[in-house]
Length: 203
View (spheres, rainbow, N blue to C red):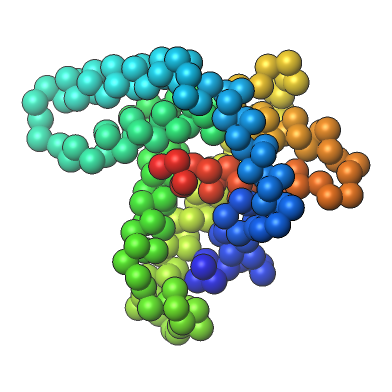
């Protein structure tokens, strides 16, 4: 994971993927509780899925039988189901920011699954040029993190403790409740890594 290091941290330097022990247990407990409260496995989420299927079919119909890449609308539809949980909202099939998110995640997942030599020999990321595609993937991942940051800032501005709609709201609530605790796992830096990881894991 060092290929995506930034200022001493990897893209997975924080969050549930890269932690262990009590921190991992606390994060797991939080995520499971948040999923239950947000309707995971219940009819509430099923309604969102039906809605996205309908929008997916409407989008295809709007293309008027013009040839197109099926992968893009499918990924947007699946991504939007996850987005309801993680970000609390829906993005249109033409939303440029959401396309940036999907493109960045696809590049990162493809890079890891391809078994790049840089994954096993991180020092190769310093080789001049971009023979292994490290810089391209890194730029796309940074774009994903900027996108998540923007959504977090939007949530912070309109946060309502009595109206927790998604993971970001749940995390902000945790930050406020545990801000004075010594072993606080809810930090401003942690929230970016965690929301990015959760989207990737569900995606």
